[in-house]
Every structure is written in C-alpha cells, then in structure tokens.
Image (cartoon, rainbow, N blue to C red):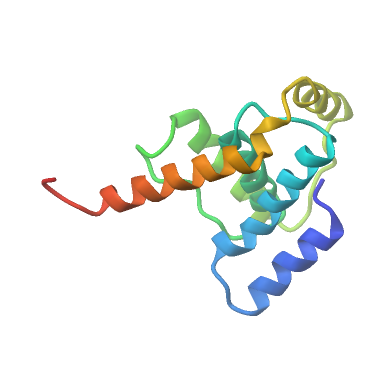
Length: 138
C-alpha cells in the first residue's frame, strides 16, 4: 500500500499536467526509500522499479503497460491487470496471506538494489538503450 504522501505528490503532478511516467516516479522513489530504510529488499534495481510502477498503476496513474516485445509476456499481462485495477474506481482489499507472502519474500532479498551505484548503472543502461533505439541501420 503506497503512503498517503506519495499518492498526494503523484496527484499534484497530475494536476500540474505532468506525464504519467513522472507521476509514477513518485512511487518508484518511495520503493527505493523503503529498501534503503530496510523495510524490505529487492533482487535488482529493475525489480524495485517494477514494484513502484505496479503500485502506481494500481493507485490510478494512467501509465499504460509496456509495448509488446519490450518485456516478457507475463510482465506485460500483469501490467495490464494493474492498469485496469487502477482505472476502476473501487478497490478490493488485498489478501492478507498474499500480502504477507510477498513481504516475506522481499525481506529475504538484499538491500544493495537501491544503492547509488546500482541506480547509476541502471540509469546509464536505460539511457544507452534509448540512444540506440531510435537509430536505424547502425
């Protein structure tokens, strides 16, 4: 469950007309903070980012699922499910068993996924892929 201040910041971004990815960035930031505080861990920065984006979609941020070919079919299907859940008005309460199981699994993971070095490496890799994606025939 996202913190109230995270949802507030994301809604503020939406009111200011900022892109859905900017709004979702608040949820990713919250996830990194949780890892740094030791609330839970993550296997990699990509997993931490994915958790944040999933929370954003479920909270109603109009962030569409990734296009086919960019991620695995399973990830895309889950993103579509999260997106639809967030666009519906009402929310069902998450199963306590499932919630505890997920939290338990994340608690066993390491904390280095939110380190400055790991995030720097991830940012550079993402920038590099953006740089080459637009070029054809290179």
